Length: 376
Image (tube, rainbow, N blue to C red; front, side, top):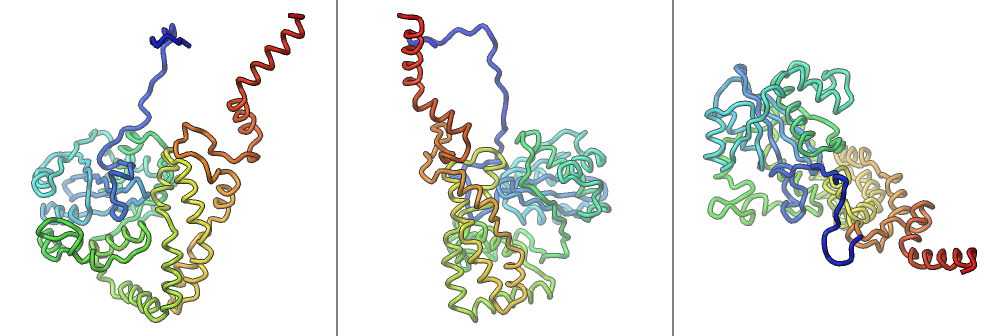
């Protein structure tokens, strides 16, 4: 190592590699993201039969797909308008892609033609989800969705360069599952933003959003952007709302516990992308700590819908125990500073930390010992 301030001359090449490509639809920086809003990247596959659409939020692992039969541009544009996209990948440029730029001020990115082959796309999906076929996903007879979903995974693997393990499912939905709202209706109803200044304040979402968690805020936004039309599902939600309304004490206690829950979805995304720091891991631990209380409260409400939420809630006790044993609560923010792992958790880590902290003393003692051995 040089001490004169000049760069060190090396004979061997220094290995460098691209570890991740950051695009508008794959941003993870908290400062660039709205915690109450999903950051979607979309893939559109245009075919003579219609259009396959797949959307994903890599920060939360949400992955959805659908098909729009026919080639009516307005229907395709309305489907795109359901989501607040940061990026759109397509197989061909056409009238729709031109309209997207004019309406959403978003340029569509053309991707490799070979990636849109059905066999390639199906293989990508099966490999990612460890499936033998697509029947379990309900995509066996949905070739347009298969192509768009497979290509979106292909694109994410190419740019993110990790196993994308937070994407654990691909959910198909039909346009008959939600109320069809065209762009004009969405704007005039001011569901999530006002006509005048495009801000959340003054919109329907602003009036209704009393959520305590980031994940809850994103869910409420999705519900408003895609209203249900199935009577049974609507009644199920109404029963849940009624149960909360009628039990004020437990509801307020539940809100207090929810107020301690950090953005688990996005923190887990950081863990998958190996960008989580000590603050993130300790936030996970503190969030998991109160899950048993939340589960108990949910199971006590007089609503099958609310009860089912409690029954399905995984307490993640094994993960909490691991974080509690391994992560130091006083660890510095940056991983470069070390001291993330608690002393006593791993003998090898303790040995390395000791060498780091007492390295100069160890070298001085070694020098003294060697001099004594050699009689100097």
